[in-house]
Image (tube, rainbow, N blue to C red; front, side, top):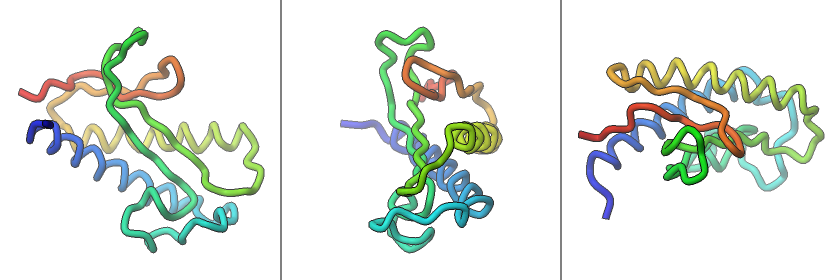
Length: 130
């Protein structure tokens, strides 16, 4: 059973990801054709099911990680078109920059950072729920 505080924190994190996703869509959503099975941005009930970008975060206990527990981040560009690696990297860095700002606004009294971890990006820092 998950605690109310965990659920509340994750809901706030989800909302921050939604704002980042919306900004990425505003800036770059028309750059590539969507995957044929993908709805236009804003058409699905949840933002990770529509538009060009899908940004998610899931809790990781941190086993094997030098950074310990945190939220593993994933950013996908959902298209069948070839997206050059340099452009994927640019989208990822832009997402990180936007998310860092959102984390500061959403969790103003916590020290949260985005770091490169074993297999990608991770939000680490003050995850204390007390």
